[in-house]
Amino acid sequence: MQKYFDCNLWVEGYEYKNGATDKINELEKKLKKNNIDKAILTNKLSLSYDWEIGNSELIENSELQKKENIFFSAVIVPELFTDKNLEKYMKKRLKEKARIIRIFPKSHLFYINDFYMNKVYDFLSNYRIPLMIDLKQLDITSNKSFAIWDLKDLLSRHKGMPVIMECSLKQLMFSRLFYPLLAEYENLYIELSNLLLIDQIEDIAKRFGSHRIIFGSNYPNLDLEISAGRLMLSDLPEKMLEDIAYKNLEKILRRIKIG
Amino acid sequence: MVDLDKLGINYEKIIDSHIHLGVLANTYYQNYSDKKVIDIQKRFKVVKSFCSHCIAFSSLDRQMDAVEKASGQFGSHLYWYLIYNPNYPEKSIKIIDENKDKINFAGVKIHPVFHLTSINSKKYFPLWEYASSNNIITLTHSWSPDTPNPKQHLSNPLLLKCVLERYGDIKIILAHSGGKVPFYDKVADFGKNYENLYYDFAGDTLYPPVFRKFIDKVGADKILFGSDMPMIDIRYHILNIFNAGLIKEEREKILYLNAIKLFGNLDKN
Image (cartoon, rainbow over all chains, first blue to last red; front, side, top):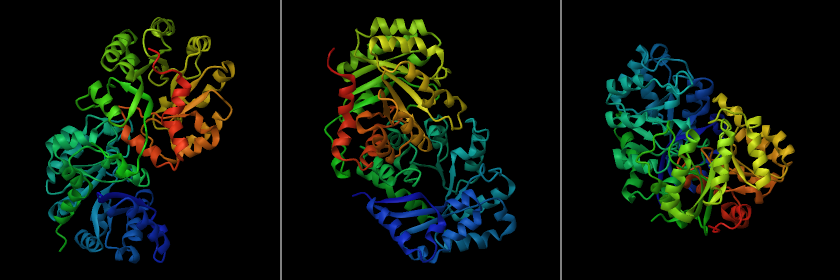
């Protein structure tokens, strides 16, 4: 049975507060049922309220820290560079098993390529820490007019930083935007939860290589059974499925200079 | 060959009541072909696909050529919804009337958003009259008005109230059943009042609990399996229904029995 490494699992951090072992057991059971061997959790609060309160609430949870199969993402904003010691902060978070950095420039109102953020990307690039971004966050006008030039700028200036692109606005994955980006930038990866179009996962794997696709469930926005099951119903070779489901993300994370 | 059994997915067949052939201008179909769509349908045991051709949304004149070509290629696998464009009511009815007995005709498809015409507009009344007189099923795009795309308010299924009260005998399938999770309750409650409404959950909202929600309110006999292929890969919708916690009898009704009952003899042509 195929096992998965999920890069995109959202939780309400407060539900997992220390001592909430029932809730943690429930999560583990859910992961086990769907063969999710490892998962990277993001706190919804980091997006909807305060990036750092959300990060701390989840990442510093001592019960979750003990779970070998649980990792975290840290959501960041530009003031990480001005208000905190970037290097100290990032090293602490890495030590606490944060493995992906996420940004939401539209929701948190900042420019993806501002002076501060470029300093952060320089750091991520040096340490080979992956950045995850939702294409929807580059839809500045909310009318599907995307700041693709800004994404291109980021990808070309920070080649050492793997960029995992997800898309929570499903229709955008039908677009003509991301194939040319995949062709142009080797450091760009696609998270698969919204690749809904006919044979789309298979086509990207065949065209750009299965190493460019990362498994993410986008749970609870999408059922774990559906995102994991879609891959199982693919006719891609076993080796490709294994890479997409697990090994690609593992490989990216293994390259992070944690020390 | 994909092994459905390893996911605990077991079924005899599917009748997909909502697919398309052809493309949409704003969508990037990689190496699109009609064959690719039908091959995947068949691989997942779809025995009949009920289809409208996308070219007809923008050009009624090209519709029948496209239908005939695909019918020639795929024969009795395909059943057709012909498009009614409310901006060309007479022309639309003429095409439907002249061709319905020559093809595997399933019914009429309307798309209030594509045609920028509210679902309760008088421009649809020639269709309702025609459907009522000829016992013709209509499949309509339906969506929540509460979405970022303001045009979707045109397809709010709750606006059909005046139509259903005036034409109580016509059968309408609400494609997508309103499309958005927070809107499903309102649509299902609305549906309790109308015996001739049917529902599919085709499209990009994958939400297994929707099946139970609608079964409890309108009954399992009113729900059809729809995928919206090729925009949404059918595999997602197979997983959607198989994770809905239905009993086998309910699932079989939705997968194919309800379509047989609604559309009648499917191999008449």
